[in-house]
Amino acid sequence: MPVKNTLEGKIAYRIKRSKVSVFVRDDFKDIGGYDQVGRILRGLVKKERLITLGYGAYARSRKSSVSGAIVPEKSLPELARDLLNKLGVETFSSSAEQVYNSGESTQVPTGRVIGVKDRIVRRIGYNGRYISFEKVS
Image 1 (cartoon, helix red, strand yellow):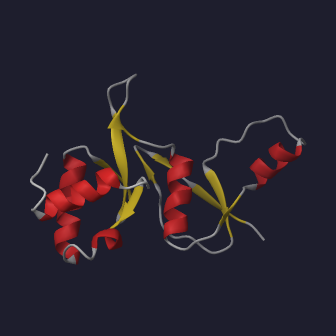
Image 2 (tube, helix red, strand yellow; image 1 turned 30 degrees about the horizontal axis):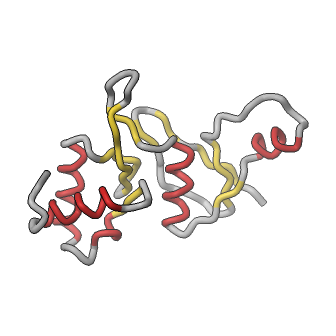
C-alpha cells in the first residue's frame, strides 16, 4: 500500500473507501492535475487495482476465485449503467428486457444492450466485451 501522503496514496485510498465502483478522472480533480491523475490511474491499472472500461473510465477490480484473472467487482451492465449515470446520461430497459419483463418472451436478455435517448459515442467494456446502445423513444 502506497504512503497516504503521496498523490497515488490519496487516489488509491479514495478508490478503496468509495461506495461506487466506477471512476472518471474528474472524480480526482481536487487532488491533482489532469495529467498527474491520468498517469496515476494508468499505474493503478498496471498494478491490477483498476480495470479500464473506456476512455477516461475505470472500475475497481478484484481477483476471480475461479480463474484467478483480474475482473471488475460488478457485472459489465451494472458498471455501464453506473458510468452513464455518472456522466449524466439517462438509461432505460432495452426492448428485449421490456418484452421479457412483460412475459411475452421466455428468452432471457444478456443485459449488454442498454436503452438510451441520446446518441452515445463512448465504447464501454473490457476484455473484448462491450455494451451496445439502443435508441429508446
